Image 1 (cartoon, rainbow, N blue to C red):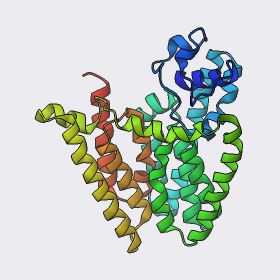
Image 2 (image 1 turned 90 degrees about the horizontal axis):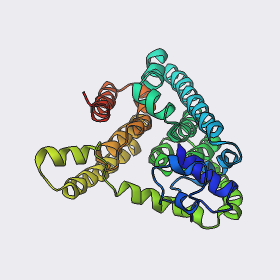
Image 3 (image 1 turned 45 degrees about the vertical axis):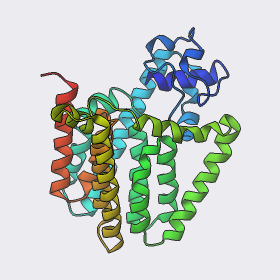
Length: 308
């Protein structure tokens, strides 16, 4: 969250483009000493960067608690949407909401750490609800908004497109949102706003200790890059199969949930709050295997993050 604050302050306080500049370009800034990634430009979408600009106009403590409050509201919004969608799909809304909002990783990391994955997934869930309700125009705009917060939300888009009854309206809503965000972001950040896509990809090319490929590499004594390559091939094969299954009439919500899980299992850069990508879909998919696998991943992340 201190990176979010630093990027906002680079823009608001120092007149620097957060897609070109890095926190170490303003070492005297009040947020600088708290930032971990001091030589990294922003890897977040232009919608989030625009929305976070006001954080640069207030003190660091005010910005910090504002981010925590926003993260908490985003998770509450996700829980409310998940409960509503679960009830509509014939599953227990109380269990669905608890699976997301009472998950310790979500509470400690997504809320306590004020990560923007909550905002990303809230927009994605609004898009999901729109597709299920036949409001494809709104759904397309919401899905693009999620990606414009953080590009990781794009995993849902192909499944939502296959599941939409009026695909043209979904694409039209997406196009309108892209134009609106572009009109706002390009004057503010120039083409640097597009660099966030590449920066996010570079992050995924890294390896965290808490990822499944890194753990398998240590356990098997195999080079981590080899494990990552196999995992990525398996992920690509899984997504292709899931898309084909959805195109044949399969439940696109279940397919999106399994795609999210496959992504989390395959990525070399896995952090505990990323479980928020799969939990909402596990909550509404009415798929016990998906829910069980999602909870197993959560347990694995707790063990990795908190030494026992």
